Image 1: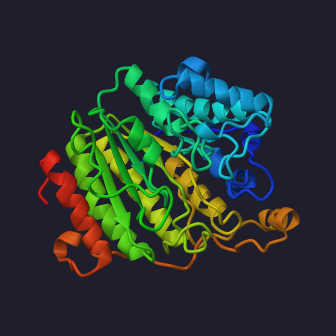
Image 2 (image 1 turned 90 degrees about the vertical axis):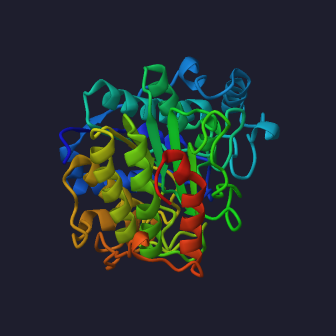
Image 3 (image 1 turned 120 degrees about the vertical axis):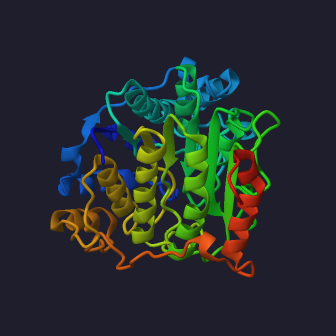
Length: 389
């Protein structure tokens, strides 16, 4: 399906590093790109270096006082500012924090620029997806909110309708907050319910501000949701809303922490189910947004077994040259994983699952927690989009 695809990448992304023992280990990016390179995925992508976001670009979302606070903490990591989330256990300060975070933000905007200009049909910032950062504070491992900055940049260039689809296991609260009352942006988040997981938000009744009813969409799934339930929820909500909204650009966040091995959450998806989600988003980009697709990474803390495989699948999907699920991971990559982590790397690109799901419109059971979540979301937002519940 893809005509041209671009990846924004630089090893300088590895400087976004909260330190030893922090779940957001930068080596997950290194392992991903090494795997993608050894499987020849990068041969089908234009790989370009990222520019750092300047204060004007960051200021599309973040206040100047906050940017100054990040810069101070970057220069002196002892200068914590807990009121702004800097120096917390989630967001410990580190030397170069501002520069590393601005590079990620600049990369996502570079991806958006390529798609908006038409120089690429699809573009990706695998280091991006830092969706929890708020305009005035860091949150949930996120300093600057690169998806929101990229979307705000698109709006500044004249975009009239942008859809954002977030499949991270955690609610995309920062992006929703920034565009809460913005009718030009539709935010859709499928995540584990905030009753059980950080950030404690993202319920079906969060539907947008007074000037943008129905612009925020949340599918809050119960713990234990597996491939079949997740894909059922996705297909029961996302396609109909995108078809109604008709975005000019589709922006997506691909946190892979919904996997059953992820240590920080409680959903039960496989690599194969996550791969099916990326395929569906790709198809919808072509169907509803003229193929204009900007993708980012996100969460994911099973750093050896999950993140490199699913993001390599994502890169390959975006490039239009998917990697077969049954493909073996390269021997050299497995040796590298063992050398730097001491762990045994997965031998195949699959978990051996065949994701299948039953369409919600063919019949549903409101005693089932997944179907309850789907029904609540559809009832909350479908009428605003003139879609039948």
